[in-house]
Length: 289
Image (tube, rainbow, N blue to C red; front, side):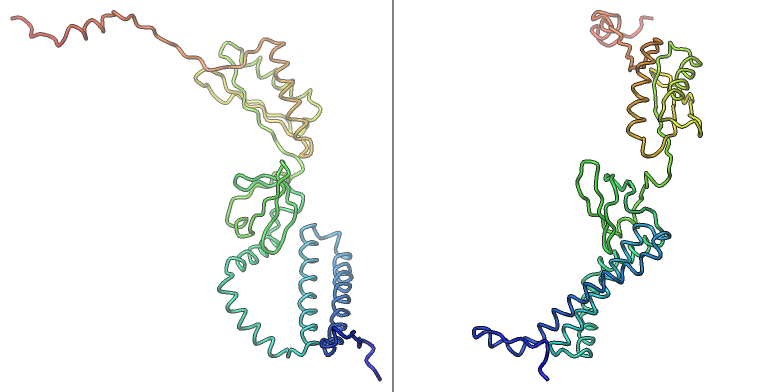
């Protein structure tokens, strides 16, 4: 019976006739592998979607795709006559060589596994790492992609995430925004604290519970230092910050509360003062006896 996958190649390609059947079978294996990877990842993730985070679903999908890709590559190589034992031996030797040459990559993979179990952040969180701040766009085996607020992509190796100090800005549903304010010494402390509290209470983006924090934090060179800490939903940060700063300036102007600015006292010493004349007179003479 003729092979159903055999292909008769035209004259110019007749030299490739012995490879026609392996090529056809490889194309079928490749198509089936792609289809199975799609179906298998859905079958694994769908029952657990309610309990898995977006980060876990992404990693599971990639693990399934990589595993099936390896199986497909081995099957395609067998179609072309490569022996599996030979491949395993070559893979072992190559693995040792690659292991020494790719220690950094291996470290990033291991760090990625630790991040998977620790879950310090998820896709969509806003994190700070060094000088970079932005949304977690994707999590891969070797690195993380961060999309900054000015819409640039930053690739950060997983090893850096494990070793460095990472701040998850949006981990919790509410945040506190602290405003440091310097007020002139001419103002009454109780009046200023009352105004700060009223501005916070009247802002629609500020939460009632936990209640705002108003405190006198110290005495500066030219100011009384106050702290206003307000709690807000993490998604309302921009609207809350803009509105409360504008409200504070409007209320201070209305109530005559002066925001402090640096003061300097300049002493203008006369050009021919006593000190100058003494210096011009030269060293003191010995006292007379």
